[in-house]
Length: 403
Image (cartoon, rainbow, N blue to C red):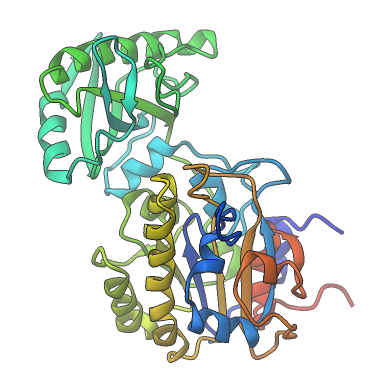
């Protein structure tokens, strides 16, 4: 197989009136329950997804490469057709862009989690009980607009326990390590410079974290802060430039709005529920030819290790499928950015169920949208980077290659 890159697709893409809807069910893939032997998706009652799968071509999507567990940013970039190894972006820049913070050249941003530590400073809860946005907003105000060694430090509430940290000043570098060990029963890590030029930045962040520990000490369960994903604002070729699309994003979580903004999508205002997102799709359907719809609930339940709640979240998504199909988009793609098995309580390397519906697809014999059914589908086990060109082809948006 030839490795198809963005420059190659750019030469072939063409504008047409046809419409593509990409529905990303975050963390969709799972692992079998120890008692039933079925995954969350296989357990869920999904008549609408199953009906759509029976008219589609299906398979399993390999997000990065076998055995590689993807983060959310690379997991989505690859679905948009951007090689996540070539096009890299830190979580912090995405969080800041997702809340419309105007990152300036030279600014460094990080994603933060308010967390809980015990008397020995050992992390007992990385999400501080998922405190509300009102609580995290109050804590961010306590930490906001500090000045450390001539650098201004801004603390910005994002959603629930999540916040963004922005450093503004001269001579800063994103080439520093995280303070978040991404697991409990450990102490927060000291931030380290990965290069000589980043030593001052690492020192400033560590000084900020010392201040944060003192300020947050009395605000249990959010009595500490974890930082990761330091980066600057990225500069990616836009989807309109590469794919000749007019793309729009419908996502309630800021990080995914930031990621969509990074590749040039218009960010549509929407409510926080799945139903709100579908209403946003309907209201804007005539204005765009590509829609990215993001569903977060499934991933959150998987990370909480709540198998039954993830099953219910998948069933919730299934109920809105007829609203999408009623609009009669030319192409519908349903998949996830990665697997988040409740058994693991986090992202995993397992491939993700995928379906692609269009008038021009070659339907296979898959009758159920699930891991065990999709592996027998016509797409087999395919690299996620190939999903976008396949969607474009099925929307008749790619010219022939060669004479």
